[in-house]
Amino acid sequence: MKQFTIGCFLLFLSLQLLFAQQATIQRVNPTNWWVGMKNPNVQLLVYGPNAGTLAYTLNYPGVKLVKTHTVENPNYTFLDLTIASTAKPGTLKITGKRGGHTLTQSFELKARDKSPKGQGVTSADFIYLAMPDRFANGDESNDKFADMADPNADRANPFYRHGGDLAGASQRLDYLKDLGVTAIWFTPVLENNQPLTNEGGAMRSAYHGYGFTDHYAVDRRMGGNEAYKAFVKKAHGMGMKVVQDAVYNHCGINHWFIKDIPSKDWLHQWPTYTNTSYKYQPITDPHGATLDRRVTLDGWFVPFLPDLNQSNPYVANFLIQHAIWTVENFGVDAWRVDTYMYNDQPFMNRCNQALMDEYPKIHIFGESWVNNVVDQAYYTRNKINFPFKSNQPGGLDFVLYASMNDALKQKFSWDDGVNRFYQALAQDAVYVDPNKLVTFLDNHDTDRYLSVIGEDLDKYKIGLTWLLTTRGIPSMYYGTEILMKNFKDPSDAEVRRDFPGGFPGDKENKFETAGRNDRENEAFQYVRKLATYRRGNPVLHTGKLMQFLPQDGTYVYFRYDANKTVMVATNTNDKEISLDTSRFAERMNGVTSARNVLTDATISDLKLLKLPAKTALVLELGK
Image (cartoon, rainbow, N blue to C red):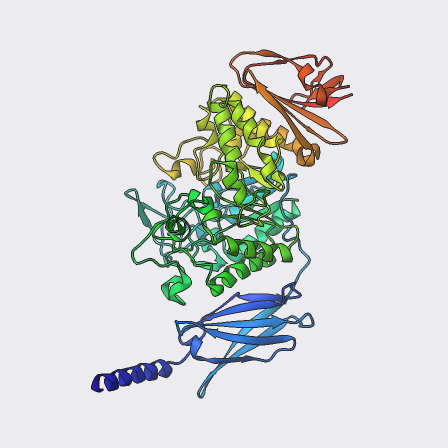
């Protein structure tokens, strides 16, 4: 009885101390909202010392506080608002009371503008992927900040930040437009106020951007929120779109809500640290163990990227509303979703649907790094009888990526060489729309394409031809057009080197013709020629694809619609061949001549086509 009395007294004392502390509000997320959204509901996360101990009210025409939620941590509360269609833009006051203490917090409701947003990317686009920190530095004053967890910026160190930013990227939009690019995808630009981490014995910064520490702030070293708005506005003004890189699965260890976590179940918690296995098979395996599936999905990606629990409704709402806020606030057009397969898939369907409901044209393509068509199809709209049905419209086509690289590395045989490319496309029937898949030859997590194919310029041209003429939405990694190379061994930094000419003091400027050598200019002009042709010819966007069985190292396919037919004939051999076209009569019947898209030469006799060694021929057929 005495122990019980002491326990009650201690509980009473702790409650007295808690209530003696004056409540304050330090953050409200989202930081603002809009009137006239299709979904009238929004949930505000309110944070500050003892913010969860207040009783909240608001009085604003057309806005109703439906419910207040509290969680384990008294520093948080969640407010469910409904915003009527009749509500007007303005600043509402949220009032919190406890005893004799009253505080108010302003929250702005903005008018929606008519600027472009959520336009989507389609097979008519050509996406350029760049890592902002390594692309171009337009403002040296924001390279580093002494008050950030990582105050370093040193281009001599491959693992530190190098200073690239949105201002620098903005200055290079003319270069991208001239190349034929129609959409720009950056690795994440949100704040990564992360400490250096020890990986493989080297201290590394979060220059890649995948460890968010504040969802509502673009990193100061990128230029901040206003710089991002300015970049998107300029890109749109030049007829280009912007792809946002989303991360839902995890956040940075230094995220403000990780330092003072709302509740234990905000994250996936384990008795001892548990890393994901990185194995994707347990997710779709009908015979798989529950534990294996849980480790894949709920294990942490790495120790410094806490795994968010999307089955927690407050976590889910926070992430979904941030996605919508980002499109509305910055005007981005599409989403690339990092580590898509590690997310809770019902959550992903809900998030995708929320975005598509507000922005019907938006495109979403996630990263699910798998090596077979069935597993890849699981994460997009598909025709397979899976117990779970994804609503993701697109996805990164890792299967086609591997097959195109293998086609250029391997000797031709029954299953190898160019047969790998053919066989990957031959399984497209599993997708609802394979044209929504984003195709690529390399990216920031892979060996660079040029190095994979032995720095062979002829093979390089073949791969770029396939990328820009086959089905899907082509994406190219920065620097591929100027023959940037390297393998990930000994580190990822080797494939994330600075774009020469993007930084003050660079000895070479490969953004300019004069700064590139002959070989680099040849590669640049090849990409530019094909990308420009592709941009102006809908047959390569929406035309049907017909491919013929590869024979003796040759591979031929056609893109065609009611107005035009384009033939792509590839010789992957080391010697010239004469291609008898009679086998392709199904698509060439009545064709009397052709124009070589790459040379503009006219071919009047198409019975036998001479294909030099390691060549891809692109012909616009005529009658």
